[in-house]
Length: 249
Image (cartoon, rainbow, N blue to C red; front, side):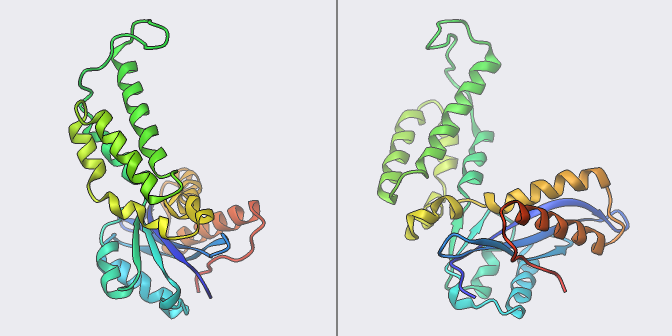
């Protein structure tokens, strides 16, 4: 099997055994031609370096070739980066760009907000002004990663810094911290960039799973939880006319 990437993330759900909340760990592989399938998923009691190490061991047992995993995309999951040091020591890490952008929102100070709409001249409520600030910064931050080259992305980052640093110094500092890990995807073919710069491909499966599991509230056992996740995979792959995906057992 040839794969240029494994996207790994976590999805919380309400599987309860004696009132115990668990998580699902999952990995999705992206091939050089753009094909992508979920490779493996399993229930864990927590998200840590140890549970991620077990996850990788199970993937290796299923004949995942270390030599072909060139990059792992992370949503910032606890312990994942640490687990790669021993499980995949030569694999590069890509920080999910969407999660990087989401992260700085809690540091927004909303200093020097405008009181009037710049286009209509109409007065702005405080909440509307805050929404406009948040939307503007998020949009500009996401556009950084849509640049064709890493050099162009660095230029866009510098422009965002110059524009917002005076008003939102804390948020800008948080966004820039560790951002070089968000540029790893530029080492791959341009056609793959939308697929590998974030964990969105895998997040789609978890959104479907959460929607269904919310109606169930609590799973009686691990098997029922994994069965639902498997059915979500079948449904999502059917939508895109894909037939290969992970199976447990």
